[in-house]
Image (cartoon, rainbow, N blue to C red; front, side):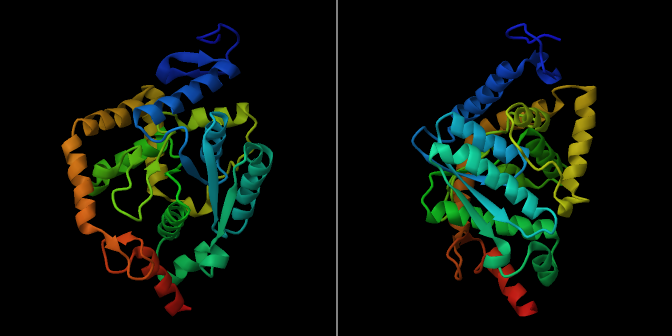
Length: 310
């Protein structure tokens, strides 16, 4: 198997593109996909300050690596959830990457420790508030990432969501006809109201397999294990279904998700009305000031319940 571009020996084949690449050409392909996503979706410019949400996994570390190599000013934030046997490993991967790759670029890694800031690890908090661990985790991460981006005046917050993530999320939203989530499922979420950071997903054109290969070929040390709290997640089931379809018909995932984005782009007036709807429905939380549809935001409600339950 030879590289489609330079005809030397290939190290990876991409059936969905009917192509194969050697290491240098594959790295170029990945960078070009990210560059296209940034430009096509108008995610950010060369002078914007970017905050990358990192987890220690292949996707977020690959994203940080790509942005730095392309000359962007990209700091990162890691949320330590305090998961026994997992968080310490993932944090070590992030800190090692920051020390060896990121800091020479003059950027910083910030760490938010849930045990210290929220007063308990993620498992204990979810038990206190009687919510699934993943839901508790999502609430804390969304809140803390947005808080850091807004308070430190970053122009944009970037996450490592890939094509598999977005296709499986779309499948779940379609299966349950969750119109509100479908309206907002996009590689870019503008800062529609004051207090919300602009959020982008520069990896949406790349598959999980491609990003794993990029990490390995570029010697990025990442945590391979899935979060133990994700066991039984519906998203993992949807990914498995899409993987089977992809095996039988390469390109299924990107046709499904990119086709959705094309239809969404044709409904720009609907997107405008969604921003207007946000402005009409959202107002500052009385406790923390972050935008919410209720008097008190979900994070502050959760933390209040946790304190009462202790």
